[in-house]
Length: 209
Image (cartoon, rainbow, N blue to C red; front, side):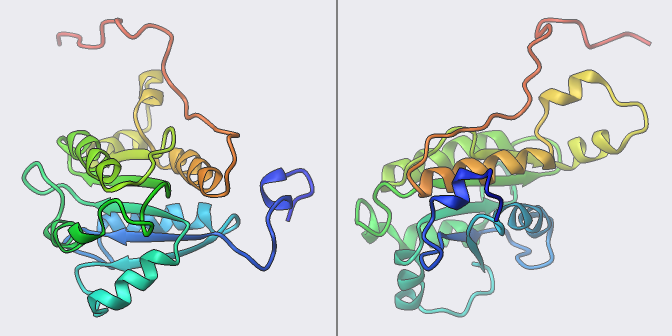
């Protein structure tokens, strides 16, 4: 624990903040979404107690899962992109959780959303899922939604980096997601922001060859 980190200093050591991660991707453990979640877990681990449930393979019954949800202080909802929508494990979870809408299990608890995709479609899913979660009673803290694509991952790995890439979501932005989620879960307001390209959003980036 760093004495310069008020985040940790203010927390009761015997009451760790629990963040429940619900992976609604088709692949579950070992998939691309799971790989991004592993990166997020590393950023959460020094501030809270994170736990992942892979909905595609989880064997808990509805009552056991409800107890896990009730004991959490905040959530991460994660999914891949499948034909412009979230994964069927996430859809089944949302349908089976309808009776919990507006209950204290969710009400006011913060939720982050992480979406993976090959190239496009993830941002729409991210926004729609945030809307569903808000309707259920969850709170959406600032800058806790991230859509990460294979296309962006390959671009970030390229040798010649373009300054415009700073405006794309990247894995380092998960530090902001983790910070703001736990900040909200512990009643703080010390928000962080990721890098935004403010130099010239209207600049010409398409060049004929």
